[in-house]
Image 1 (cartoon, each protein chain N blue to C red):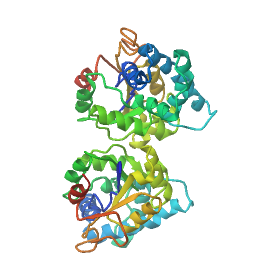
Image 2 (image 1 turned 180 degrees about the vertical axis):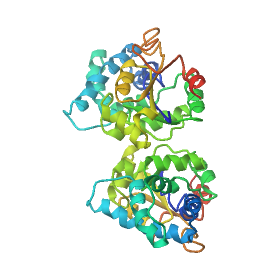
Image 3 (image 1 turned 60 degrees about the vertical axis):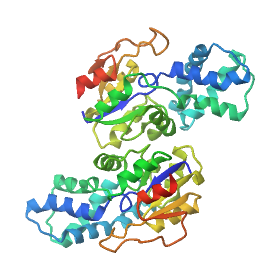
Image 4 (image 1 turned 90 degrees about the vertical axis):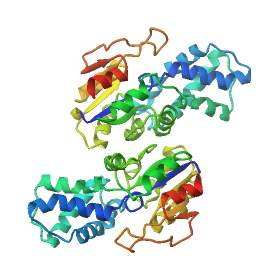
Amino acid sequence: MRALFFDVFGTLVDWRTGVARESRAALAPLGYDLDWLAFADAWRAQYQPSLETVRSGARPFVKLDALHRETLRLVLPAFGVAPLDDAALDELTLAWHRLDAWPDVAEGLARLRGKFLLAPVSNGHISLMSALARRNGFHWDAILGAEHARNYKPRAEVYLAAADAFDLAPQDCAMVAAHTNDLVHAARLGLKTAHVARPDEHGPGKGERAPGANVDHAAQSLIELADKLV
Amino acid sequence: MRALFFDVFGTLVDWRTGVARESRAALAPLGYDLDWLAFADAWRAQYQPSLETVRSGARPFVKLDALHRETLRLVLPAFGVAPLDDAALDELTLAWHRLDAWPDVAEGLARLRGKFLLAPVSNGHISLMSALARRNGFHWDAILGAEHARNYKPRAEVYLAAADAFDLAPQDCAMVAAHTNDLVHAARLGLKTAHVARPDEHGPGKGERAPGANVDHAAQSLIELADKLV
């Protein structure tokens, strides 16, 4: 293995409490008091359907910010929020740029970087990935993933374009994710796989505690993964 | 200004002495003793014509390694080198991945990173840029440029795609280069410009000592540029 590719939302950063916190910061000053975690869950529930509009070929590639902004407008009415102006929608969309990493990530990535090329292979685009990297102290060798391939995981071209960007064969690369589905698709293309447990991703005890399929490596944190691989 | 985009060959790294050194390391063991600097100059002289085959639309985008490998085969006979096997051609092509930065670059970039997003906007591709970053200790926010835009500078889309990747307008970005031509093309699109003198790029005293057109900033090193901008 020469390169490690990382899923980001859920695997490296805690999107749920972060989106809840940032949504509150944007909407509470406007007088709203939502169930912020439920709002984050509802927004995220629109994620896969919105990606599918691109994966299916129904529309050309657009960055995840554009999809988040569209789905935000779908979700707000159910929480009793009146239509927001463009500036407020833009600001709320940036909640996804302001997420915090799980506590093991910065140290784990730094150790893994001693042996492997590291890149996010996320459905987040370049500006979002670079914002999360700045906020959390990640040092990527390149930002790969959806914007590089101009399609969304788990479409095969996203994984294959990432390996090609480093001039590597799929079998020289590993996908690291907290989601079995992501790993199953990567494995079909020949990539190695590493599962990281994020048992609290969707709320306490509501994440994957263990992989649901065969993987090459499984760990409870990126520090444990570094212990195994470096 | 929110982001700085960097030309790399000549501006950040000394391609001439590096290619000469790496070519010697590859070919001397095969019994060859060339004028190594003249060989580096001759190989580089094929650079713009090879880029033009892509810029003109005569062929689809290919990575710079592919162009370097083709032009290598054009240049070797003039230096009396017999046809090399594929492995030797591949190895020699990687000379461009093993170039050293000018002495001011690592410190200058580190200081500029405190205020700006930083990305290479080079005609080198992602694997080549990440190799140079590892070798020289550069910390990029993203690797943009030719492979991202799938065309070669000075085509407009390369500069515009870089700004778009960071969700910025061209006027929020600056191109930093040792080559007036690169800056003139960037300025036409609305980017700010910064010239860094590299008077020895093509041999002692044979580089641009000063910009040949109006630029927004001019400096003798990236450390001086950081003094002006940070």
